[in-house]
Image (tube, rainbow, N blue to C red):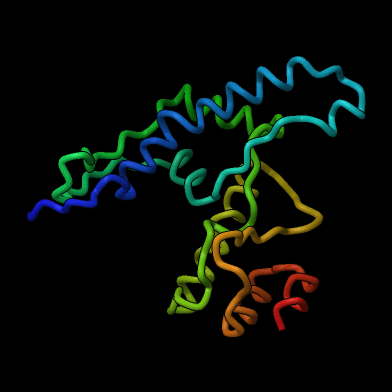
Length: 172
């Protein structure tokens, strides 16, 4: 494969950084900050929680190692999964409320997803995590900070996926 000169951030490398650095640091930081709070209701409102994209969280807890030979000498191309102990620490952090996720799998331009079943599958990622941890949410939040707005064609798919009417009314 030909060398790619701008290959610093291929997906495997970025995911591995989440697995090795960002997630363990977030868990550690939350434990440290939240242990210093008193247990009153007022202090509970000031808890630290790290928000992670559901697709990264899903990969973390249900990881399958892979190797992608992409021709980038800066990218090993191999994803190493977290250990059982690391997944257990992740599970405990979720149960404490130290790790959270929105309902959108990632920052997504809904207008370029294409196939509706792919879009619907993306909606299922957060739902599967919510089921895994027995989480029920009074309000569902679709985080879309990098791409403002939603394509009109995505509104019926969001409705079928159970997104809140208040979100959908602002999109129409």
